[in-house]
Image (cartoon, rainbow, N blue to C red; front, side):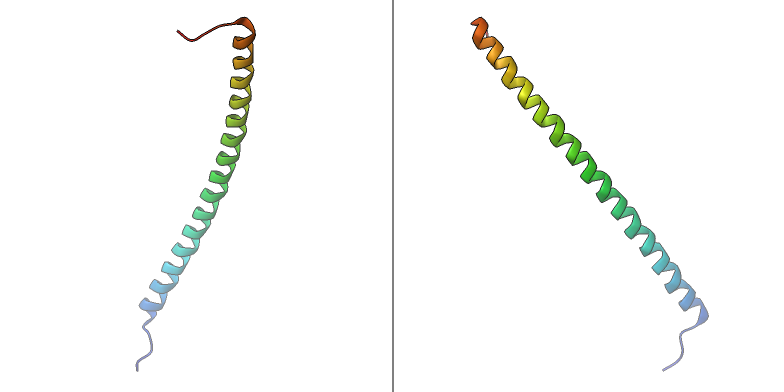
Length: 66
Protein backbone atom coordinates (compact mmCIF):
# COMPACT_ATOMS: atom_id res chain seq x y z
CA UNK A 1 0.00 0.00 0.00
CA UNK A 2 1.34 3.43 -0.88
CA UNK A 3 1.49 6.44 1.39
CA UNK A 4 -1.15 9.11 0.78
CA UNK A 5 0.02 11.96 -1.36
CA UNK A 6 0.55 15.41 0.12
CA UNK A 7 -2.30 16.77 -2.00
CA UNK A 8 -4.69 14.17 -0.64
CA UNK A 9 -3.68 14.94 2.94
CA UNK A 10 -4.23 18.66 2.36
CA UNK A 11 -7.61 17.99 0.78
CA UNK A 12 -8.72 15.87 3.73
CA UNK A 13 -7.59 18.58 6.15
CA UNK A 14 -9.55 21.18 4.19
CA UNK A 15 -12.66 18.98 4.27
CA UNK A 16 -12.29 18.51 8.03
CA UNK A 17 -11.94 22.27 8.53
CA UNK A 18 -15.06 22.87 6.43
CA UNK A 19 -16.93 20.23 8.44
CA UNK A 20 -15.91 21.84 11.72
CA UNK A 21 -17.14 25.22 10.45
CA UNK A 22 -20.46 23.68 9.41
CA UNK A 23 -20.85 22.11 12.84
CA UNK A 24 -20.33 25.50 14.47
CA UNK A 25 -22.84 27.11 12.12
CA UNK A 26 -25.43 24.43 12.89
CA UNK A 27 -24.86 24.82 16.63
CA UNK A 28 -25.36 28.59 16.32
CA UNK A 29 -28.53 28.08 14.26
CA UNK A 30 -29.88 25.69 16.91
CA UNK A 31 -29.18 28.20 19.68
CA UNK A 32 -30.96 30.94 17.73
CA UNK A 33 -33.91 28.68 16.97
CA UNK A 34 -34.22 27.80 20.64
CA UNK A 35 -34.25 31.49 21.51
CA UNK A 36 -36.95 32.17 18.91
CA UNK A 37 -39.04 29.27 20.21
CA UNK A 38 -38.83 30.65 23.75
CA UNK A 39 -39.87 34.11 22.55
CA UNK A 40 -42.77 32.62 20.59
CA UNK A 41 -43.96 30.69 23.65
CA UNK A 42 -43.85 33.87 25.75
CA UNK A 43 -45.78 35.90 23.19
CA UNK A 44 -48.28 33.10 22.64
CA UNK A 45 -48.97 32.89 26.37
CA UNK A 46 -49.45 36.62 26.58
CA UNK A 47 -51.89 36.60 23.68
CA UNK A 48 -53.85 33.77 25.26
CA UNK A 49 -54.15 35.72 28.52
CA UNK A 50 -55.21 38.86 26.62
CA UNK A 51 -57.84 36.89 24.69
CA UNK A 52 -59.20 35.54 27.97
CA UNK A 53 -59.35 39.04 29.42
CA UNK A 54 -61.12 40.38 26.34
CA UNK A 55 -63.59 37.49 26.54
CA UNK A 56 -64.40 38.35 30.14
CA UNK A 57 -64.90 42.02 29.21
CA UNK A 58 -67.26 41.00 26.39
CA UNK A 59 -69.21 38.80 28.78
CA UNK A 60 -69.56 41.59 31.33
CA UNK A 61 -70.71 44.06 28.69
CA UNK A 62 -73.04 41.53 27.10
CA UNK A 63 -71.41 41.84 23.68
CA UNK A 64 -71.91 39.18 21.07
CA UNK A 65 -70.12 38.44 17.79
CA UNK A 66 -72.02 39.51 14.71
